[in-house]
Each structure stands twice: as structure tokens, then as C-alpha cells.
Image (cartoon, rainbow, N blue to C red; front, side):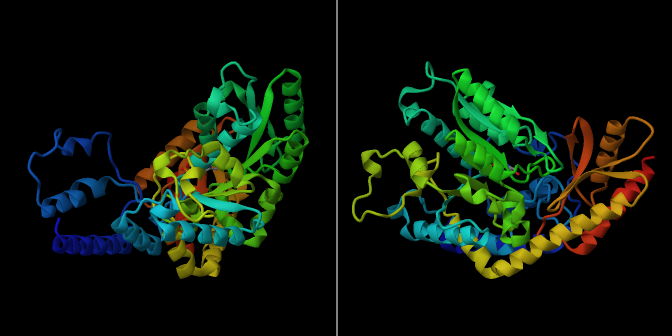
Length: 468
Ligand SMILES: *Cc1c(COP(=O)(O)O)cnc(C)c1O
């Protein structure tokens, strides 16, 4: 593609993006599609000869877009948000155009130094002490894997990478049943093994770990000759927003020299608002904390902020220095590839820099506070209806509910959810609470307005009464 064509198609793509965002409200949030519909329209073999851009672009609009779920839709209330504020999309375009690798300081000095700076901005914004240093990981799953690897290496006296896990003491990690499945996968991939992930029961309205049970589990493991390594705590669990008492968890961890990683992938963004920080009280004494600016803060995916009290532990666990990667010259700079499992790294700091500067912390705080307030008032309105039950109260902007019926409650609520999503005006997902199927609602999309929350109420009530 020559530079004229590149300019022309870049302009076209930018115009398409702006039009898409401007008209997104007119689309159903989730497409009405059957499996295989898109695949059937794509040739089975690659073209031998190059095709004109006009045709490729037309097929994008015709074949692909109708089959997309619109995550930037203001009435996307499913899962968790994956905001890409327009300003971060602009930054991503620049990053794509430069396409630099940012694994070492010298492979892109400005990218490394900007990453250090904006992560320190974020650290201040969420109220972590300056003893923490940050790195951008591709996802919270990767940050959690890195933290679990550190737990493993610390517990094995920094020998696990060398001699492996076979034959040694069994390493143990503790978490509640409310943590994200990325914890299970980190346990599998790190070689610790699912049988050594000890599930601690939860209690209380926030469904946090029972710390006495945690203490008992650790003591019992020590007596049985296991090697306790670390604890994964969560602030804002995926299902219903469960929050562990981080301060109490760390207190137990300190007693036995364990490493504590806090997964706040979704809820961490809300910590830019001081009033929400009670949810992770004690985080300042944890060892590792992750949150995803690519969820609620508005940074285009992927962008996961991982903060560490001792990055040396992480570097000791993950740094490899073959000769061709050695940096000659001035010491004292950071090579972020030593802080993560993948070697290659995209320039992810630029979109954070654009985002934070454009919106300002106060703009971002207002957005998040609005989502919390609108979600809470929706929960109140539903609770006031005689045929609805709020199953889990709002944690920030997430709550779950059920609609009453004389028949099978699970079946009825699944049918209601399907009817709501087929309608297309809003999009919700389900979870299970103590075995019961419930419908989740979370507000977090950047373009959402209070009217969208009212629409959600109308659609939910209308569909529920219709389905009776
Ligand atoms: C979304 C989420 C994750 C996974 O995040 P990725 O960045 O997609 O890996 C992990 N934990 C919690 C609590 C989450 O909400």
C-alpha cells in the first residue's frame, strides 16, 4: 500500500469510526445471529491475487459489522464494560502507525519512560503509596499469572524455574470461590496444580474470605508438610462484586510470610474516587495489585495496570537476559519485558496518557460516580416492584436480581434474560448466587446517560410482565 492509499484508507477508517460511534444507539446491542452465519460468508481459501481495498472495506461493513456485539453501546450492561473512549482510540491509531516494540528501554525509550510516568499517575490516582511501582500488562490474567509465579518462586527459594516443581514440597495458594477463573488458569499454568488451590469459604454481605478459616487452612497445610506460598484476594469479584477484607487477609499472610495479590480488575478503576476505597482497605500493605484501565476507566483494550511493592521479586522471577537482549550503556533504566511473561510489548502507555489528560481525573471520577448512582437507583426502583427481588445489593455499579414466578425460578429468569437480550435495546448477562440463577446488571459504559438506566428499567419490567 503506497502512502497515498494509506492516507486515503486511514481517513476512511477514521470517518467510519466516528460515524459508527455517532449512530451506535440505533443498533441492537447484541446481534441476532446463529452460529456459523458469518463463517458461511467467508471463502474457505485465501485469495491468490490481491484484492482492491474497496471490496475488502465493503465486505467489512457487509459481512462483519452486522455480526458484532456493540461493547461501546451506551446500553451495554452485560459482563463488565470494555470502554474505549474516543481519545484512547486516537492514541491507538498513532501506536498502530508507529508499531514499535517496547520490551527494552532502548527499543523505545520514550515508551518506557512514559509508561513509568503514567503508571505513577495512576498509582496516585487510586491512592496507593509511593512504595508501589507499576507496569502495564496485556490483561489482568497475565498480571495474576505473573503474581502467582512470584508466589511460587518465593516459596521455593527462587529455585522453581531451575529445578521445576516435581519432587519438591507442594506449593499452596489460597483464594475464595469468588475469584475470577484467571486465578484457576494461573494455578494450572504455573504448575502449582488445581489441587493446591485451597478454596476458603466466604461470609458476610460482601462475600469476603472467612479469615479465620484462611488461618486454619494455612496452619493445617503447614502441619501436613505443604508449602503455603500466597493468597489471591479480590476486590469486586466478577459474579456479584465480592470483596475480601484485604487488611485482614494481609494480616494473616504476614503471620506466615505469604505473598498477597489483589485482583481488582474491574473495581480498581473506581478507586480514583476516595469514597470507594473502603472496599479495598488495607491494599497499601498487599504485595501486588492489578486493575484494568481497559474496563471501567476508558482505555482501549488492552491495558492492565499491575502495581508491585517489590518489583525486584517479579524481575527475579521473570527476567531472562540472553546476549542479544542485553542493554549496553547507562544503567538504572527499566526493561519492562522483565516484568511480564511475553517478551514483545505494545506501546500501551500512550492511550493512558491521552485519556487521563483529555478527561482529567475529575472527568473520570464524575463518569464513575454517575454509573454507581444510576445503578443504585435502578436497584431501588426494581426492589420497589412487588414481583422483583434484589439478590445481591449493588457493589459499586453491579447488582443482581430475579423476577418472581410460581413456577421454576431458574427457568423463568433464563427465559426473561433471553427475551430481554433478543429485544436488543439493552444487554444483560446472568450468574449464579448460592446455586440460583440471577440476572446481573452493571453500569459502566462511558456514553451511558441516566435515561439509559431508565430504559433498562422499562425494558426489564416490560419483558418480565410479558413473559408471565
Ligand atoms: C475481567 C476480570 C479479569 C480478567 O481480566 P482480563 O484483563 O480479561 O484478563 C480478572 N479478574 C476480574 C475480577 C475481572 O473482572
